[in-house]
Length: 198
Ligand SMILES: [Zn+2]
Ligand SMILES: [Zn+2]
Image (tube, rainbow, N blue to C red; front, side, top):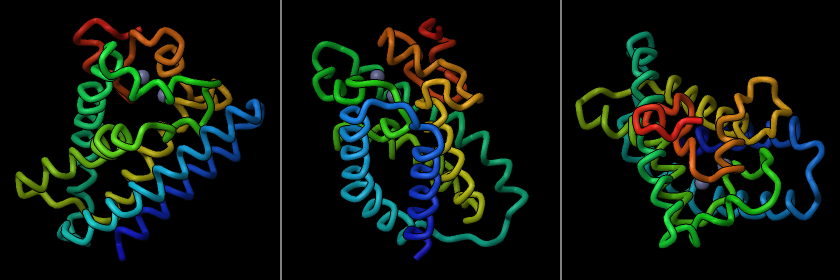
């Protein structure tokens, strides 16, 4: 049940951002991005979220302590995303990733990806911090998990807003433009360390 609610938080955030900021996108680009994102949400995000949170020990206590876990989630997801995203820009794997780089940058493109890329890259980066903390016996309060779903979804949407949202730093836009920089997201820590931050 909690998994289904978390999925709906994600859906509401994503589609609200699409309707808010995708105002001036060529119809073909928008339709391609929406179709691919919807496919990923229904085929991969929905079942994997329900499966994961059927097994995750749902915690309603430790609300304040769990706020302290948010920086861990932000840092691990950024590093994980860099590690899984950078190899997709090699000549061997770019074929898998190129759909995400085709067409105009828009919010709808946030989840426009190959199925494997969406499952292991996008969803993996969202969940990796939760799994690592769980492994270390730290269970996150479910309301903080819900906030993390909203933060992660809105953040990726802002980074694809093509500067329509004033909070768009342009870092991910530059990744779409040059394809050889800013492989992470959020803090771009690994990019700053390895010299690929632009
Ligand atoms: Zn992108
Ligand atoms: Zn890329």
